[in-house]
Image (cartoon, rainbow, N blue to C red; front, side, top):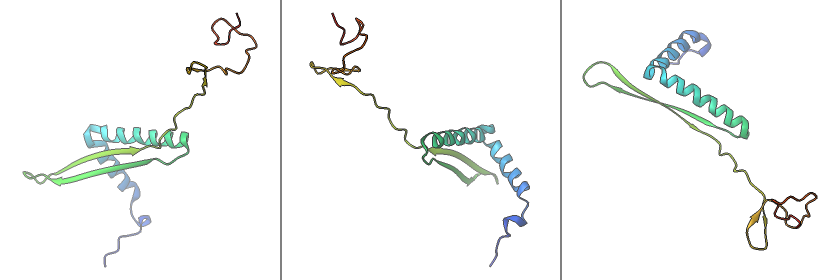
Length: 119
């Protein structure tokens, strides 16, 4: 049975550099920029909502039929927590329209524009 070496026994800096350089060359750098932007968006969304986000990196590898090259496509997707819709409070007027003013509350300093302005 072939057991891979423990990560501490491998050259992590070399592996990381190789991987990042390869990712940076995908789509002339657009892939790694997209990954960076979506990562930041997921952090912001999770921080603001106090809920989890998900980031998925998908690579598709397929050999080129005419050469010995390898075709690679890469895609980054994120799943952000749903933000709660903001509510507004309205009161129902006798004619069944809505108003932001409490129809039962007397205005202390009514104006002509108020729904409850005193004539």
